[in-house]
Length: 253
Image 1: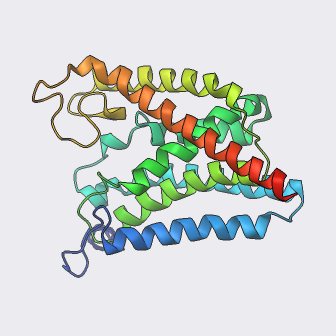
Image 2: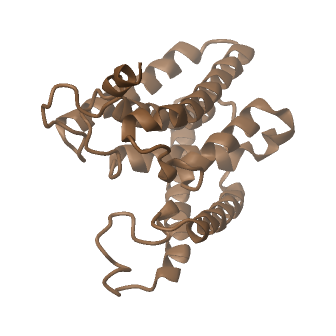
């Protein structure tokens, strides 16, 4: 039985040598599937009743949690040495999983939803556009499919919350995203301090692994400042796009 599961979840089934690298054919195919799925979901849901839209977003949040938790049971078959510790909830995308679940499925946390939605748009989008750590497995192997599915669902949840009018972001609330980013930075720093050889939220080395810290170009502590600032700028850009789209809609109306 174990050998069966090892074969099912191995990273290469046909020894093609094909993997998901940035802007490769397989990467572009995944981009088309994810973007197409989000657009299709919006077109299907936009004229539905509010309660149905909320149920659909609930389903996405549940799918995200199931994908994340169930993945830990597959690690031994995928990686062959037990749990993949890098997938603990210290990266921004992985820690957003429980946060999304609480804000979407628990009414008590609904008031914190706006910054979670904004980061759920930006963080997985950055990863999907430049999937630097997806591994060397074939595009159809479990590792690749689960990773892209997880990030795609997370981004879909964030975008659909805005596009369907469930969450109406206001630029004056950007400070909430800043506070959440500071908390995530401190949380990731705690993880990096407790465990060695991990680079959660890219606080040990730069996100592109070009050796900015290793080569002494910048001190490591500076990443705790740079990363939240970069994400804040990205969130500000997302607010700008939302404002522009709303203005265009108003003019058209």
